Length: 285
Length: 285
Image (cartoon, rainbow over all chains, first blue to last red; front, side):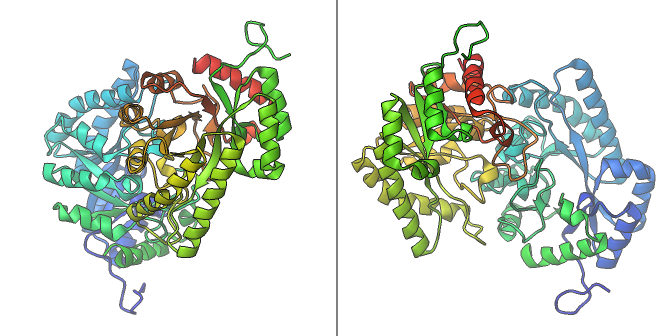
């Protein structure tokens, strides 16, 4: 049995949720089993492994295990200029909304998309996202799903997400009712931003915090920078301070640990999950 | 003879300056010779190669060639907490100021420094920079040198520079007279920031633009991300738009191309300089 440092059986904090990507070396049944062992109550799922397992089957598996699906990653990629690409993106997002509903989660995380090939106009790309959301938000609402715009670190601005700050995400969300569109606050993406604490206050006032995700900032960044999300406690982010910030404005929902990290993926998935539960207790609570 | 695309001898734009790091495969005499061939009027120098050559000797070499030293890179690294480390940093910055004066440049670029080992407090680190500048700014003024605070991309916030935006750099500079402390605007570091255009207006009004540097944003970023600065025209940044922005607020000084790029460094330095002159003509002017 996995044990905490004091020798008692290790039990996850009730607010802890594990994002599936953190332990992507585990199959969905293995993940569900590991969660049960550690008392993990929530999982954030990703579309690709869920589709591979079957959306209905995945929904049944987690429901039968008493697990809450805290979010589905991800929709978005709404910055294409060509009509056909935009149409395809909207269709794919509608599917993602339906999958979220099937899985029983209220939160679909959106990564907005980067600049189209050869395009240099960030402002115009951000406007296209707003247009797409006008179509998607009411559709999501019909399924009881909220769209969570996730600002990504500015190092992803060209190739992944032109929404780089909480300010921009909240400005986008402001066009829609709070019950339809909110934001996903991820420490890894916003920790450097001196305006982020004020924007968390704003997000709280406006009722826009749909999801709260954690990863630590560690350097050197790996090539491509995507898989450099550090284990909680290994980096430069004061996790407790960020947890208190979102709580201070009323967020009492799940806290998802989402790591993309080649080194961690090369380790045993069950041990990694136990270690992550332990780090959460040490550095977040 | 190197020729432009229309067959005429290639001549650099009068505002073009080459940062020494762009062609670090060239020795200082080789760089000076290549500048003469291409009609390049300005060079941004770095302390380490200048020290290796001898500061007085380097000053004589560029002066005799009629080259303007448009900046010296770099001072800074002012975020240490321990008294001894802070004292050493201040001493090193005084030396950098003296070197800048010897080289005949009015601009010393400052990279502020990252978080000390184990430290997670960005705000406190930024305050320590302000304290250090209080000592350094009058010293620089006595030598006729301005300190140019350079905000670095947020991906460098932990390990290199806690000043991540033009807003922060200008807020820091605001404690000092504009003739003592200003900012260095580098497209690579600020291009993603929707507040940067407004802050360039502010910098113009406040007379704070000391230097303007160019590199393009290309992906995927290399491991460590430092040496991913792309050749002008290869990436996502609208160079002409940024050049017009600084001009619109009165900046008429040199425009330095500063690339750190392993692939470019593996090529012939003289050809790289000629190619950079050509790219500048195509994408900046």
